[in-house]
Length: 126
Image (cartoon, rainbow, N blue to C red; front, side):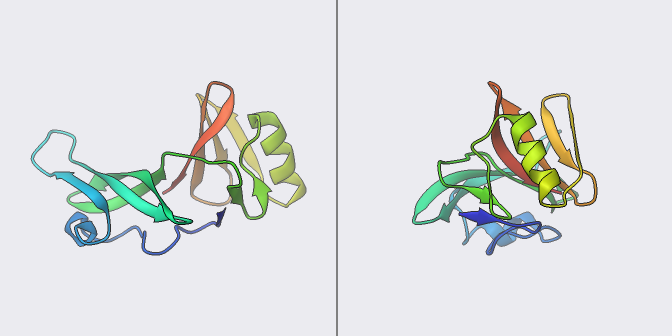
């Protein structure tokens, strides 16, 4: 799938966690924890993938698609890259970014890419 600078439908920030009850497969919401959590699976290109959410007072603040698959792109750039190569391709497409502490963050957009095992592993919209 080609991901963009905003979450793909039906995902969106700024809504109550309960709104995802009929959207996510395996919907799990724990509002009573010290660190309230929301997770589930969303259909991407016909298959379900894990998505997790950061919450603030029951409202979705961040969305992380925790599984990058072969063929996934960000604004047309393959995400199946080593971080430095991905950063170079992002720069060529006009996206400034920084790499630090296990992640690559876009400078001008609230988007981060987590790095695991030397590869881009997930995308997070803040």
